[in-house]
Length: 189
Image (cartoon, rainbow, N blue to C red; front, top):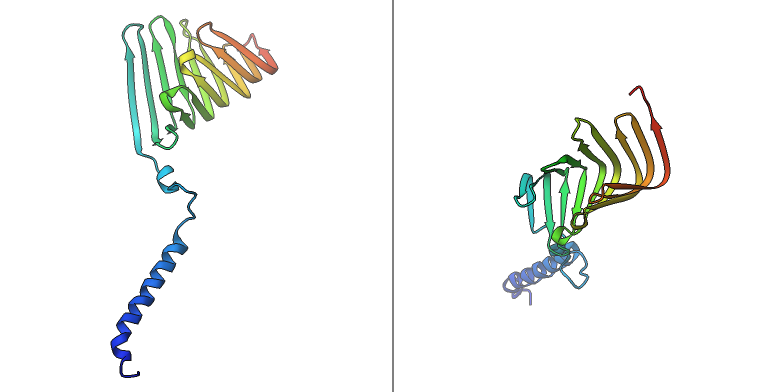
């Protein structure tokens, strides 16, 4: 039996190596939930430092969207933007600039969720401007509507308005402040 050990040693070594490899593979792998989760959370594309221009000649609308990084996930058809910047220009209306730390866009861009240091700057025709800041803003582009349930500050010329919650209909140019509204008008500003 001892004489046959040298001939069986490579076979025993290969079996032990196969068992060890199988054990290491099982120990390193994440538990499966029925679907390949690594495929679901890896973006199908990533774009860094991009800028996109959209022009609608029929109504004179020009939009420029830029961001530090864009990630798109196929599993829920969602796009994530880091440091997004949007500029809206339309003939006969004031320009509007929007920026935030992050943004999430649902499929078909039906909903846009801006998060972190959201700032909306709107230039008036008479060289004035209105600034709105908040930590979260939900935009529904097709309805030309924006809303938040977070604290919001609106600054225009001599006026500062603080509130919690806001709804803005860009079609009617009506801003509805929802609660805890504080209004300060300073003639000297």
